[in-house]
Image 1 (spheres, rainbow, N blue to C red):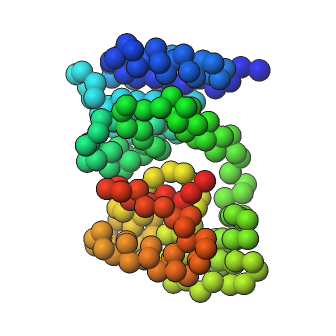
Image 2 (tube, rainbow, N blue to C red):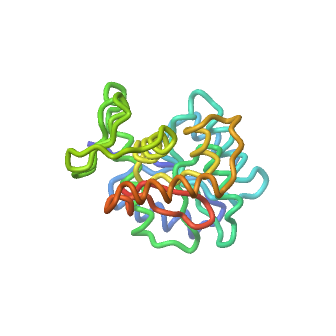
Image 3 (cartoon, rainbow, N blue to C red):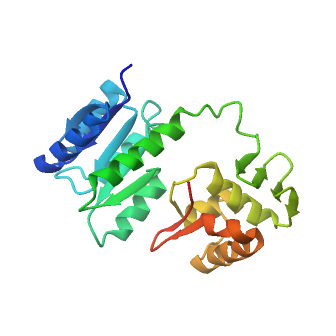
Length: 229
């Protein structure tokens, strides 16, 4: 049975070949593009299951490509892994806010890239339509959005409404990095005034209340937070 199709976008031939070689070994079908314009056309024509997108492209850059893809009804659902240069935290933040799912900094390990690809595609396969409201379970930790209740080993954990929304938002997509702005949008709405400190205070409180499970909320330096897979 053929595996998913992945579109790799980079203007460096050696990077394209490196990624194509390693992912092809895993059975994935690989398409490549060396410009933003070609990427948009291939994404529309082939509707890949995942896109690996370099942000530093000639002409139309990767952020513009990401913005267009995520805004289109036909491609907005396709997960995107960004390839970024060191020291480009601002681009990472913008990309995540546009809807990209993850990022990897160049130079990168092909094994790590392959692991990230597998994780995202595995999550994509999970049918969530009928289970969105079901409790999320991580060993002895249970997060129930219907009852707004968190249990650890069957015992309730007292959280504020905002703390619960933040925890649930992160836990719904384990492994995905969320910026502080995205977290506040999910928890309090886009019109709520946000500062880095306000998000950090809620996360500190959550970690304390969750005890040993608090370490599952990971800090992504310079970007935001994610819930550990």
